[in-house]
Amino acid sequence: MANQRIIPVGPYHPLQEEPELFKLYCEGETVKDIKWETGYNHRGIEKLSESKTFEQVFFLVERICGICSTSHPFAYANCMEEIAGVDVPDRAKYIRSIVGELERLHSHYLWVGLAGHFLGYNTVWMWAWKYREPVLDLFEIISGNRNSYAMFKIGGVRRDITADQIRLARKTMNDLKKKNDLLTGAVMDDPVIHARTKGVGVLSKEDVMDYAAVGPTARASGWEIDVRRDDPYAAYDMVEWKVITASEGDVFAKAKVRLLENYESIKIIEQCLDGLEKEPEGHTEVKVKEIPEGMGTGRAEAPRGEVFHFVKTDGSNSPVRHKIRAPSYVNIATFKKACVGQTISDATISLAAVDPCYCCTERMAFAYDWHSGKKIYDGNQLVELSKQKTQQLRNNA
Amino acid sequence: MMEKQTILKNIEEQLPEAVTGTAMIRDKRYLIDIRPDALLEATRHLYEHLSYRFIIASAFESKQGFEIMYHFSDDASGSIINLHVVLPQDKPEIESLANMFAGANWIEREMREILGITFRNHPEPEKLLSDGNWAEGVYPYRKNYNKT
Image (cartoon, rainbow over the protein chains, first blue to last red):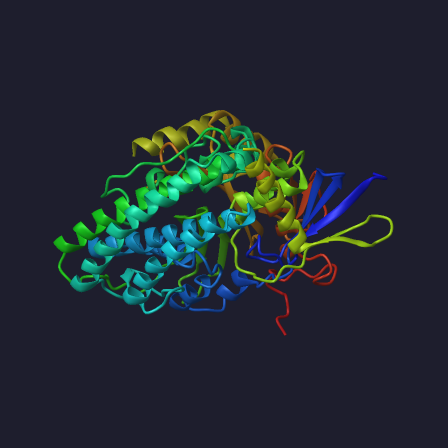
């Protein structure tokens, strides 16, 4: 204990979307333990939901996450349609899946870019974020917004995708395939990225099952779970695609799963566009008159894993109880396994590997001496440490 | 109906003492009422023997007292199995599941802070969300919580 130093990562930190404080207990360069504090920005959304009408809740849950803003409305719609006992038209199913997969694409690109940045690979960062732009442009054309698309409603979708937009989406997907090849090659074939990410932040299959982790975090450790396939919703059982897994459980495996999932997302979108062309335009919803008393569970596979919503209703116009479980809630807890035993310079990428949602741009991480309270590293210096390690590997290569 | 027979029948047969009622809410969605003191036994069966995945738990206050739904996923069949317990209003207490799987650690601490439910033998009973954020003994998700 005498030689331990605490390095706080957070509460406001580019590694995390939500303000959370991770205290890395270090001896020398090695992380010996990790503790966290949350609740800095508890918005009480579950409680707020009880004061909204069922239709208003869509706009509330869309604001839970800025990056995967459609995954919560997706799960909530599945949940409410389960209670109401309605089946949405095929055209709406295709549109929902298209929106869901476009979101996965832009979210995975965002992650790859930031992971590259933390490793000191700014080329990967610039490429990934450049390739993400056309996806956001497509969102703007389809929904009017680059983020928070407001596409979902109980019984269907709010906006149709027109024939012109289908043509544009096809072109965007076609262009993206080549860019995806470039980016995937740049990450998967680079020996220095291998050296920085292989064997780093390893989570075993037992670990992810113990923490009930989901999404790419679970799939990269060989746990083959994906709600899109296991409990199909929207158009996911109407198109051909496969679940991507890896067995190593390290940062590289998580990157690999996300990069290869991008190809699957493009495949799903293209097939959904085919499906849309066969369906009559405008048939995008069924009217739902009332929500009966009951309870429902809805889930959707967000870019980070399964989003889960539980709603209890009493026949009125608002939820009695609305429980929401975002994937990061279970994935973040795995840091305890992923970071302990790592060096500080690897902790940055290990923390980032589960993609705990990036949103905040202000860095407030400092390393203090345990005894004197004197500042040793600030946030930029921590990233600098990580970059130096990459540079050393490059020089030695 | 085949699934109902396999999933619910299995649980009814294996846990005759623990289960007080079962229902198929709709296709692939099941509700199992259990006695609160049989939670560990029932969960061990679902988690260890049937390899169901723990999703999360939802707690709420009702006329009966405090209710908790432990949501489990059977990924092989795409089903959600809800273990349901009712705890008395005056003494909401139940055994912690966090010793069985770490996935229950955070949510039990959260339920304690927002509703005041006690989880016995929790391995890490520190506060998760409310440390320094709201007063001791204030449970904002209780029905009698004054919003103003």
